[in-house]
Image 1 (cartoon, one colour):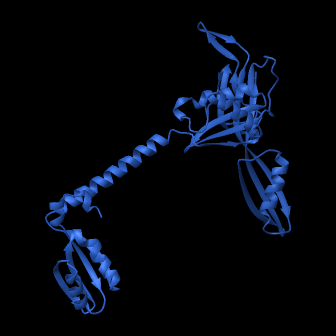
Image 2 (cartoon, rainbow, N blue to C red):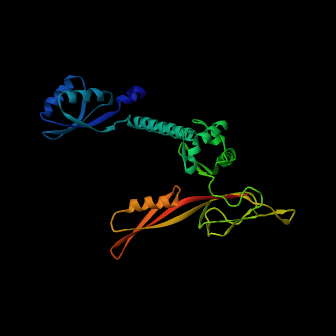
Image 3 (cartoon, rainbow, N blue to C red):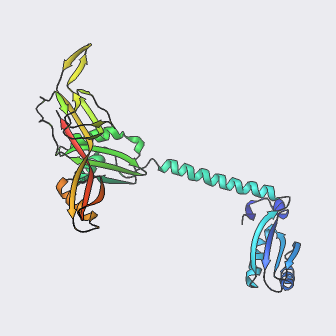
Length: 309
């Protein structure tokens, strides 16, 4: 009850309407009156059910008496000349509460509450977390205080064992996806002038430090297709330069497993993962039959990182 917070004169003008169910309702009415509670608009609908109104300030006492006498009491509504003020007060309370919740959500949404490391490069999560700490990126620091793209570049520059880093805000967590430096095109000798894909797939991310990208994020590419060209425009002239770039491609690996047994989808996926020799991002199995034999065609989607420079 909020009677202490509403104008006393207005409270007197508010009545609460109740439904009362039970036996011997006359006894209940007489008991309530003897205990000093005024009753209004009493309407009996049957020997076991009546509706009445009491002053708003007597609600708690009325409920207590009903509970003591084992009657079922249900509050239906409020009415009276002072009710609009009570409704306004309650609406303001709800509005203020909603504003407080919204402000809290907006404020706390900018804070980091934890980190999640994924991908093959997550074995170096301790080193990466130390680097993040050196940049002031810790629990309870703000997302707005740093650039996610610059953080990705810094992680790669700090750790030679990594070839890919992605930082994404997911709720109040910073999710860091890392890939090991295991796929290379050429060597770091500065003699790569054209950068080609060595797999079929879709470009997930492309970072070009020297050269000109000829594909973009989300574009499907084929094995052998040119990704980055070693040219630059200097003073309106095309100049040949070496390429320095990193490209991440989402590729698919297909594997066929045959068996005389039904229901071996998980076994097929296990063999496919062993054949792929890297962690897949997604898996799909299609089962078919041929000459009484079950054929499980497994498709694994994986992240393929290549770089040159």
